[in-house]
Image 1 (cartoon, rainbow, N blue to C red):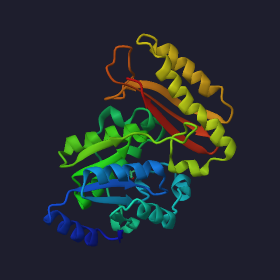
Image 2: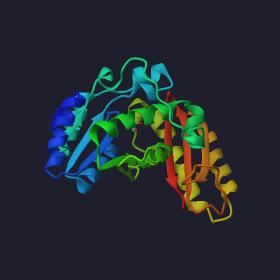
Image 3: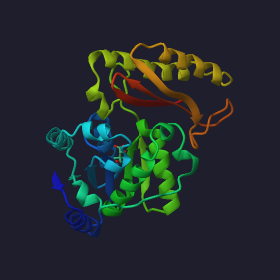
Length: 278
Ligand code: PAF
């Protein structure tokens, strides 16, 4: 695997690839890689000739200084994992390589920015779009791969691609789960054994909605699933909502695309999860 820390060296190499007629797939990550990330790499490899994984803990998307400081950064283990799946390229820049001092960014993402995650992490999606725009500009990928686990993030990036008419196709890849149902996440590293057991209520509540929604009982199943989470010791629910899968506005029984999304504090760790209902 080739490792690049500078934009210039990466761009020079990718220019040659493009001149040789190769298509490029980008998997943007913040590292602490798990099987969910590796499944994105595998999808990229199936669709593209050259796969670039970026590892960059992006400061502008953190709304809490301690969260940024404590975000796991096991770079040597990440390199080993990327090599084990034959990833072609790792782009692992320093903050100063990605940002000039006092850079400004704003994109009008409409309501999508302020719903669900946006309510709890104001400014988060401005930071996400800022860094993803930069990564697209540097790598110029034909395809970019994102996990369904960050469902709202995918919609936000899709909106940016449409607004700015960016020449990249986005691919949403399914959530990878542990055998017990817990959605894989870099943050799971922080869960104690008790937290892990408590966190299972999130995927159980989502599965409850999927299994029990009969086309006309949206508010009842949402209420019961919310109660399941609220009654779980060690878990503080932030939201559990069924939303329209395209706009994330609150859904009705009639909405064509339904997704259930949740976020909760489990011990000291904030987790999110979602499930497509229809
Ligand atoms: O999903 C993530 O890991 C990050 O939000 C992303 C897309 C790599 C941007 O920093």
